Amino acid sequence: MYRHILISTDGSELADKALEHGLGLAGALNARVTILTVTEDWNSATEGWGPLELSFAEEQSGEQTAEEAYEQAASEKAEDILAPAVAAAQKKGVEAMPCHERDALPAPAILRTADAASCDLIVMGSHGRTGLHRFFMGSQATEVMTKATVPVLIVR
Image 1 (spheres, helix red, strand yellow):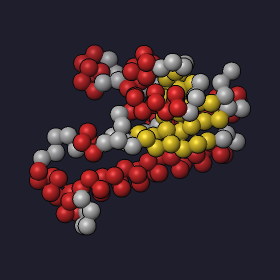
Image 2 (cartoon, one colour):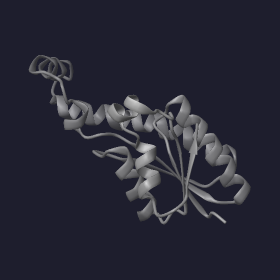
Image 3 (tube, rainbow, N blue to C red):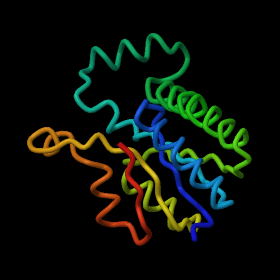
Image 4 (cartoon, rainbow, N blue to C red):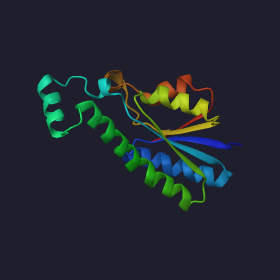
């Protein structure tokens, strides 16, 4: 049925549920997985920061600019998310490929990665926000569901 599953994670408790579910499914189907985490670009991540906050960040990072410090922190955070996820896959006997998509918004990065890796299922978590909360916060899961060309499994 499914041979290559993309599992999206941001390291949250909800994403961990989706990871566990996706790995269980992959194990049962003898499928391989790509485990994806996404970090937004510097401009999106610092939107709303004023000059004082950016100046402080540059001071705290020593030789690095604030943008370089952000990129380093994003890479370290991605590794902190992906390493345990891959270890969990290995523990279940599932072949897993970690993937860190930099400078991207989650939904487009999930769709791009699923397509590039020829995944035939996307597994991700969703908070199930509705109404104004969803309007203001957006819904990455909804965007993936409406634009994906493969099935999407949403875990809550």
